[in-house]
Length: 147
Image (cartoon, rainbow, N blue to C red; front, side, top):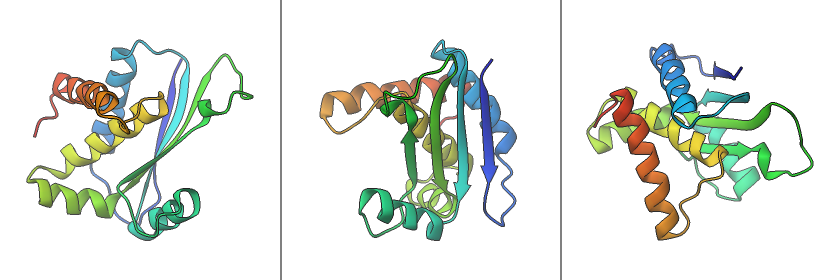
């Protein structure tokens, strides 16, 4: 049995939470995962800026940061505790305008992007990026979240 919590740490009402739960459930099933546990935490630019500076040494806000617990081999369990995904709601709104798509599409993209980072995917190399981004689009398109 998998468990995902979506936590809104902002003072804004986020209307997409129910859709986000359905999408992440779809993604878990699509990836044939069982017994996974992780959180999606929605924060503001100020909060994610502090995380970005503290953990990545980058002194600016970012859109999404994932903290993958499976990176630590000393954590073993029958349940895969994947970690946490932090999403900046401010960046969601900003990037949706910039890219010309809905806020729903942007927050879902960032959540799925973070999800694949928790699963060990990356986009540092061109080939890795191709694989990860294709998987993201497959999930989003399959669920009906299009540009």
